[in-house]
Length: 67
Figure 1 (tube, rainbow, N blue to C red):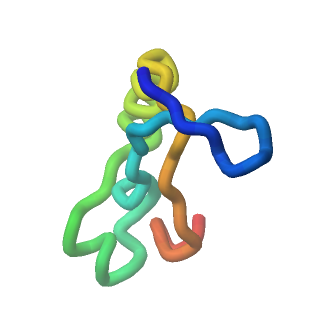
Figure 2 (figure 1 turned 30 degrees about the horizontal axis):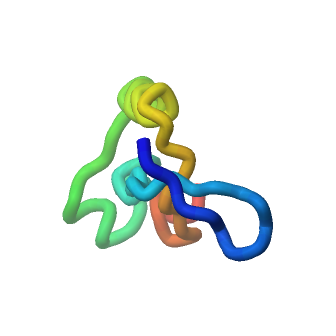
């Protein structure tokens, strides 16, 4: 995995990002349109990403209705 320094924090962030939009439920119009993943599926994907060295996960308060 390749990493980039995150400003002057001393932290390094993976250059690949795991998108979390399908994590959670179809509780919003966007979620209903793109589908949803179960908790088991979400856990498996996050575990694989962490094992691959990804430490940058895209989240937003609108994903899964903020759940």
